Each structure stands twice: as structure tokens, then as C-alpha cells.
Amino acid sequence: MLQSKVRIYLSAFMHLLKPDQKLRGYPGYIWIASPRSSLSLKLVIIHLLSMLTLPFSIFCCALCSSLFVALLYIWPLLGVHYDVLDPKTRDRTDVIKMRSISVICAAILSYTVVLFTTGSPAEALSLIGITGPLKSLYSAAIGLLLTLTLMAGPLYYGGCALRGFTKWQTLRALVIAPITEEFVFRGCCDALLQQTTLSYGYRLLLCGPVFFTLAHVHHFANAIIADPVRGVISACLTMSYTGVFGAFCTALLESTGSLAGPIVSHAVCNYAGLPDFNFNSSTKALAYGIGVFLFIAECVYLFLLHY
Image 1 (cartoon, rainbow, N blue to C red):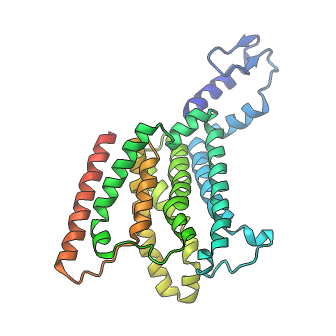
Image 2 (tube, one colour; image 1 turned 45 degrees about the vertical axis):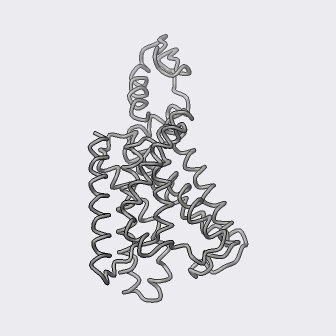
Image 3 (cartoon, rainbow, N blue to C red; image 1 turned 90 degrees about the vertical axis):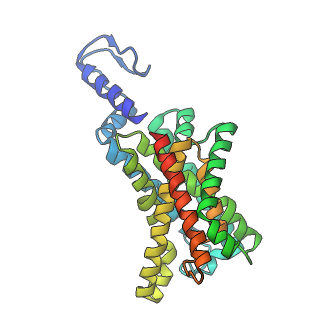
């Protein structure tokens, strides 16, 4: 990982003044032939970046998040004209198809960033949470159980939030968005932060309330422009929910070691929609309360299991 590479490259750099010495245990392309020997360009770059391991990893996370959002809006620059601020345009089939291409490209680029820091495709995929079928099935089952527990009240009283959706809108909500968003914001961002000395709690904070939440701010641009007060209040409430959900999915990823759980959880939440906290009956309030209590208990168990 990046931390171990830091030690390797720093040690290699200190050996530069020792002539005719091959550094055993270091990457094979490092060879010290004379006092005037120089490191390869790649080694120099990584050595300089390794001096800023944590800031560099955070920068890479911000880069992945920015790419994800920026590529959504690249199509008008390529000559495809539509009102990017109109919330209705995002539900058009042609826009959904274009943005699906955008987020897939963002996922590929984010994987490339992780691959650069690890140097090994197998290690990169493992850190991201791409695992074998059994581990993925276990993670998916845990994610489904936890999310159904949390959403028991909303699902019972509200049902499906996708009524009236077209085929492509449903595909976006249940397949494209969960896979690409969890791959970038959970898998890749957490993989980058795991290679630093950052604690588990701070990783939950950065992968949830920070990067994942800020990447959703663009959804509220039109509402804030139309009505600043209502728009900001709505954005804050939704982003709070999004931040908590992001932290939960990061904990789920690190506890199970697989990205399947967060993806399934994301899909279930999109299916159920945002909870309706208009408790017009004590039964509804009780159902919501029991679901939240059981969810918290299960999350505490997962947290303790992680340690």
C-alpha cells in the first residue's frame, strides 16, 4: 500500500550516496550504480508525493468526487444542448443514457487513481471491495438486512418510491447509481484513505458526510436559485440524511470487506425513497422507531465486529 511504499522509497533515496549497491527487497528497477545515480522519473514523482501521503490521498478523493460530478455536465460542452439546471431534464431518457456513460467513465478514472497508488490491480480491487462470490453474498445479505430494518416503516407506509418511473429511470435508481456511486465514493475513496494513517472514524467522516454529500450539492442548485431559504433548508436536510447514509455504507464496506453490501443498501434506499416523518398515527411512529432502534443496534454490532 501507499504507506509501505513511502518507507521503501525514502529508504531508497537515502541509499543514493552509496555506490555500486543493489537495494534488495525494493522494486527491481532501482539500481544504485554510482554516487551520481538518479532515480527514474516515476520514482522521483512518487517520492515527492509520498512526502504528502495523507494530503495526497485526500486530494485524490476530491479528484474522484469532482470527476464524478463534472462528467455529468460535460455533454453541453460536447454540443448536446439541454437545460442543466432544470430538474426535469435529468429524467429524460437521452440525458439518463448520456449521464450513465459519464458516471461509468468516472468510475474507470477513479479506479485508475487507486491503481496508481497501489501499483497492483489485485490490491486495488481488493481495497475497493471487489471480492469473490461468497464474500459478496455475505456483504449483500448484511446490507439488505440492515437497510430493510431501517426502512421497515417507510416501506410499510410508503411502499415503492419508483411508481410512475420509466424503465431508464428505474434502471438509474436501482442499478446505475448504486453501482457507480458506491464504487467511486465508497470503494475508491475508502481505498485511498485506507492507505494512510487516518483512523477508522475519520474515514467514515470523509467518505460519508464530506465527499459523498458535497457531490450531491449540484442537485439543489435550481431549488436554491428559485427560493434560497426553502432551497437551503431542503438541501441541508437531504444532505444530512445523505451524509449519515454515506458513513453507514463506509462502515458496511469496511466491516464486510465487500462493496456488494453498500450497493444493495443504496438500491434499497432508492427504492424506498426518503422517509416521510409526518407521523399522523402512533403506530407509524412506533414502526419508524423500532426500525431505527434495531438499525442502530445492528450498526453497533458491526462496529464492534470491525474492531
